[in-house]
Length: 98
Image (cartoon, rainbow, N blue to C red):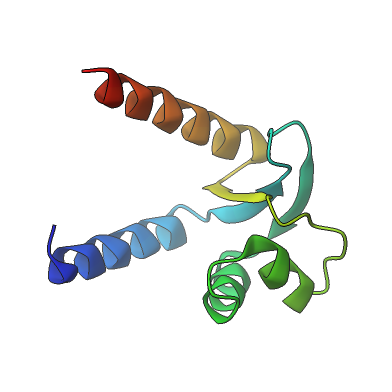
């Protein structure tokens, strides 16, 4: 996949998240607990400045106690964000098996 394709895909996803009013939900590694809900634009800036590390990004936004192995997932609700991630993992493992 070319760099140009990745940039375009990222732009499309960002636009979609904006139009769908999605938020970032920060979960523990095992997805058993949602630690925070963050506005989309705030999270995009923080995660960029933090080099992709969700714990550092959360700290920049004043959210304390987020572990290094936390997951930040997109969705309109906590349940939707979790479901999207679980379905993506399921599809990914099927691809690896074939």
